[in-house]
Amino acid sequence: MSQSTLRIDPKWETHLRPQYMKVAVLLAPSRHHLASRLYSKHLLTASEEEEFNKLSKSKSEEEVAKEILCVLRKQSVGSFEKFCEVVSDVGDPTLDDVVKRLRQDSIERSLPSHSVSYVCEESVSLSSESTSNPWPSIRRNFTFLSERLPMSPFFIGCLYEKELLSEDEFKMLTDDHIVREQKIRFLLVDILPRKPFVMFTSFCEILDCVGQSHIADRLLENPLEVKLVPEVSVRRSEIANLQKEVELLLVQVADLDREKRAAVEVERQRADEAEAKATKAESERKKEEVMRKGEQLTNLAMRLKFLPLDEINDSLSSWTQWNVHMPHDSLEYNGMGEIEGRLVVGGDDGNLHVFTYEHDKWDRFVRKNGDIWNVVCHQGVCLVCVEDEDKDQFVIEQFYLNEDKKWRFLTVLPNELQLEAVSVALHDNSLYVVGGRSKSGERVNTARVCDLHSGHWYKMDDMQTKRRSCSSVIINNTVFVGEGETDEHYCSNIVECADVRDRKWRTIPSTTTYWPTLTSVSNRLVVIGGMTQQMFGSPSNIVELYDERSTKWLPLPLMTHKRWLHAAFSTQNGELITAGGEGGEHSIESLKCD
Image 1: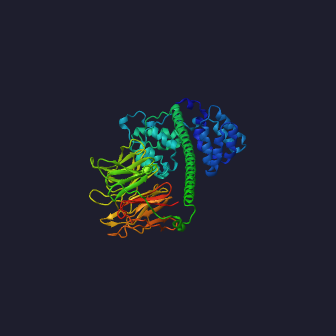
Image 2 (image 1 turned 180 degrees about the vertical axis):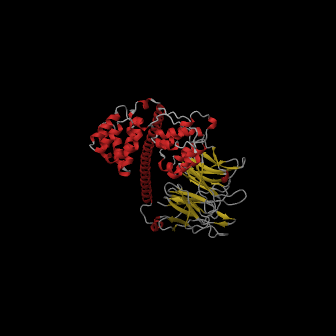
Image 3 (image 1 turned 90 degrees about the vertical axis):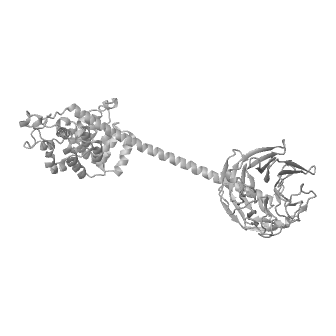
């Protein structure tokens, strides 16, 4: 037995335990006064008193009194006498009788008159061979036992301790979902009669221990059927130890239950705090997003000088023809950009062509093998989607104009992007690759994103339209994809867009021309040139700007030359530049939009 058990006042076990239920019933009407008086005598803590006051609103008087007695039985030596004093001070005559009953030695009073043994007078000297099974007396007294037999947890625990019950039988008899009548029938009909007859004496001992000696006497009354009942020795120390162990287990169960409820409450509080933090963080995020969008709209309005969209066309000049021509005979160019006073163009000859404004001169930077499918310029670096014919794969390479002017490998396109004629766009250090054509000639609608910091590729939803040789541009966190070839000799005028955050595609109104080139000016989507028909058309010089408010395409000044399969982009100063293409020969022209 532990040291904490030895410090408990033993009178709680010797005086209160045998008449625990009776005392709880008598104390029930005075539970309110009792809890406050016990607190004043330091027998209850403030939290325990508050807990009992709360229980009185949801539980019966008798249940609250039982809870109080359960807590008191853990008190130290001397607490029992303090409890008796508190009960006497209430001034209730009924409670005075309770005090008198408590101060008697109830263990002595609960033992039978013959104290220690049951022996049948005529059979003491008989040998074990002449004995018969005593358990039939239980079946003959079934009605008597079913009405009077206690089925308390203490009684069932004693049966289990004396090995009259197996672990499964103990769990069944302590199951609150099974009614008392079923438990008694199971005990008297199915369990006890199958036990060895020598255990009958243990059963009688337990009845004595729980104050039911009259039931034990009734079972031993018939000498005709029971020729020999072995001597039963009731040892006070064993009974007291068994009672203390059972009560200690009950106290431990109550402590564990309180600890569990406290842990659940702490967990609930933590969950509430976490939810509050998450709500606050979401609110801050939405606030920042609204402020960012407001700043973007303000910048856009300033760039457009607050002109209505239907007046923008009137403020624009006409296209200006450059005196410079493209450097080689090819009419098709795949991507165009500007880096610090130099115009960069990717040609279908597999080379990078750079025009320096200051020197009025073209330079060519040769790649050894493979075609260039797209060019993107950013912070002094050209990102180029190329075909590596030696390794038979498509890769992304870098070309630094401001340093050693050498090609550097960046990353390999994933297996699903090992395609020709893809389109590439750059936004916030993320590279977007869409569309293309497989080596078998099939058009695809795949879309992937590469984080240039980590080199990882991420998947977007597939586009609604399969296409190759399309063009793409990103405006205000939205990627637009248009034009291209959807089937053999079949041009497309379908434009799709997706937010770079949710990556879900949707369509906007189709363009007037087919297979135009997409770019942007002052954060507005612009399409340039294209074909007049879906199949076997001729190049066009139409230029259109998309109005998101009215979801309509508005006309801009016509180009000087009709163009198809040309390159186009806009400078930071808001100037549209287009070059090459069928119909445009080798010319370059521009349109100032400020």
